[in-house]
Length: 412
Image (cartoon, rainbow, N blue to C red):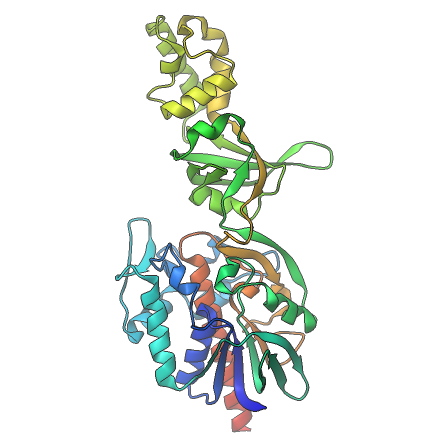
């Protein structure tokens, strides 16, 4: 059985950052255990392969957790710290017009390579192709893989979540955490396309629109309550809807919920009514299919007319009595949710190890010297580099805490 000072399970963004920061701080005998044949497979695919590492608008307000806050972690290793660190490793990053920060190469794999080069130079023991079967603690941590047993003084769980299992994230980290007594907040796919009842929206496939949306759910009394509201782009797809707004809402959505779209955000109801009534008055011979031109996408306009029971060839002179109905449909276009594309197609996992059971340095309150970082923790962020920032930040903070703990022991 080979002994190490620290074993890190998981060679993704959080695991690589933790290992490298430990080595740079002088900690010796570090093992990075990865089930894939190479490190950073999921990192290399982030940001549609372009590597959206963080965001100009970085703050804790872009994160969700039912059990704690990320503020402390971001303060200790935030956006500026990450960008300076990547620069020191030999990379350059820049923000696009939306504030998303990418490597100037626009290749996520280049970020992975920076870490691989540095990890190799630091002498970290990289154990790829090693699938962990069991972890237990005697006097030290015992990590049992399909072929070997390893022992360490410190253990870092950086296994990721359940999202995108083709990259090796099968949720096994949650079992390890649960075996050590941790509570696992229920898991849901996040940053994933939402499926909706199709019926009349098949013709909208490929149309992208900026709108406001509200996620509605019936309570026990049958009354609809608002679960979440967002503004952003919605892309109609062959199975439902996608886009940044949908990704942000996906973690909260459930089958049977209703996604209510406002195609005219920022416009008061009375202003929309006034425009429609004026148009009907000025063009009494206009056909209904032209009534909503210049107001919404033509295909969306046709679907709205159909939902209102209006034939496309009808003359608008008869429409004065349904202007309110049209306005309602423009501002409250309802889509019944039938599900989502699941963990297989999700970017991140919502839920995970409860933050209440981790200290300010992400060490387990259930087991001394056991740290849990990255997506395994009950933290998920909005689309735009926030989840990758959390992975890097949590790995760096855990490394700092382990280094301090080792130095204090040595000092005594």
